[in-house]
Image (cartoon, rainbow, N blue to C red):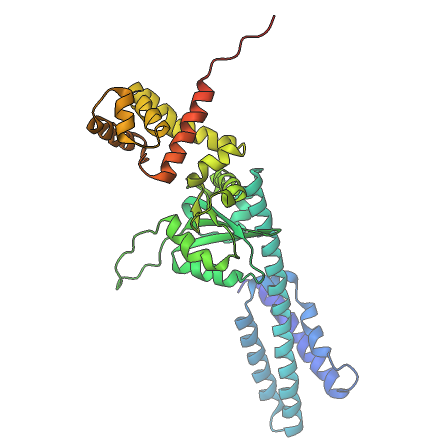
Length: 358
């Protein structure tokens, strides 16, 4: 123990013995004098000495005093009673410190989550995240849902730990926001290595901690400092999720691209254009035309083939190529809506500027 800390511990022990003598002379004069013993301790001592170490120091001090007292039964009984009060006082000091620390951590976590949601970062954000003990690394996703009446934060954190992930939790009015990141699983030589769960699987496991209503998971981003992009997508999806009648819980924000684009979300419009319209346009105008015709004809292979003057098998082949290029299957009802929205938004973006009136 460093000299300064050892000196502070000696001051506390000396104050305790002095307080005991005063209390023994007149037990009724100051019934809570034991609580004043720790007033001599500097604030830094509370951070550097744990509660377990404090109780061990109290035990050693009591044993030394009892050894010096000898066989005086009255005095030994007084020491026993007083040492109990000292132990309770120590527990009270550490409990108050833990409560204050918990309130501070909650405020700091709310500040970090608010910074992520607004995208307003400053140079202090990494240090704030580190102060919270964030264990996540690599990719991050943001999950947005309705806050329950009784939020069990500890249960959410326990569930996340069991899934080898970490969460930052924020409540904004009726919304509950979780920033999810993966952590390294504990090293256990006797157990087999576990594959990392997809964020959608983690969100499904965390779903019981939310209230009734829609639950939207933003897209994956590479780092926590990029989480504002995922948060923006998740919030935009949460705002329009009610417009998808059979939306699953949780729902991916990218599955709500049409609704988000209709609501004016520029990020959704850009995603539809860059992920669907432009790749098809760059790959083949033939595929783009086939997709337009297929969707305009109610996803009928025969009607599409007649309009394009090709065989229905040719339409099937082109639809398969479209799926390979952009990853969406035009034969599915929901994906067809996403593709048609991308064609509409992309064609609007490609439209030439209107001539100005003279």
